[in-house]
Amino acid sequence: MRNGLLWRTAACALCLMLVSVAGALAKVPEGYRDVKLGMKKSEVVELLQKSPLHLSYDDLEDRIGEIIRGDDLFRYATYRFDRENVLVEIGLEMREILGRDRVLEVFNTQNGLALTPLQRTIESGRSVEVQDNSLVIRLDLSKDTRAAAKRAP
Image 1 (cartoon, one colour):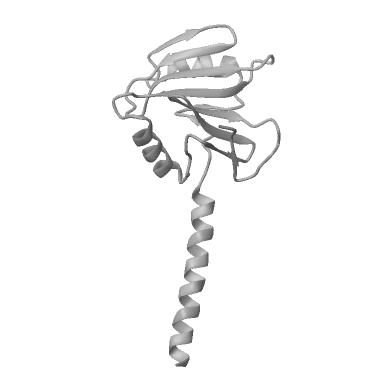
Image 2: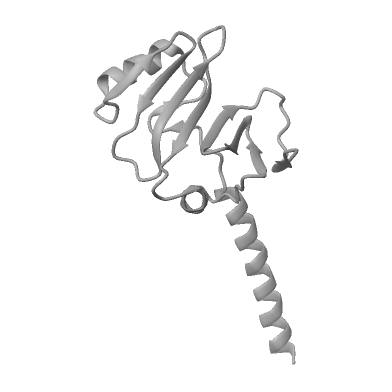
C-alpha cells in the first residue's frame, strides 16, 4: 500500500515537471530564419544581400518583400518597419500546396505552440497569429504578455 502511494506521488511529480517543461519549450519565434524582430532595416538589407538563404527581395520603403526558396511551409515573406526603421512585423505567406491546416500543424510542432486561426499567442513582447493564408509574427507593443488571447470573429 505504501509502495503504491509512493509510485502515484512520483508519477504526479513527473507529470507536473513535464507540463512545466512543455510550457517552457513553447515559444513565439523571434523572427524568420536569420531576420529577427527589432533589427534595423539596414541590418535586414545587409542580411538579405549577404546570406545564401535569401535570393530575391524588393525594398518597398516601409517594408521588404522576399520570395522564399527552400522552405516547405512558406513561399513569401513581408518584413514591415516602423517610422524608426525597426522591424516590427514579419508576414509569412503559407504554401497553398500544403494547406493552412497542415502548415499550422507543422509550425506548432516545431515551436511547441497551439496556434489556431482564431487564437493568437503572445509571449515575451512578441505575438504570432494567423491572418487569412499568412502567419504574422510581430512585436507586441501593448506589453500584454498573456499566454493566449482570443481574436474577435
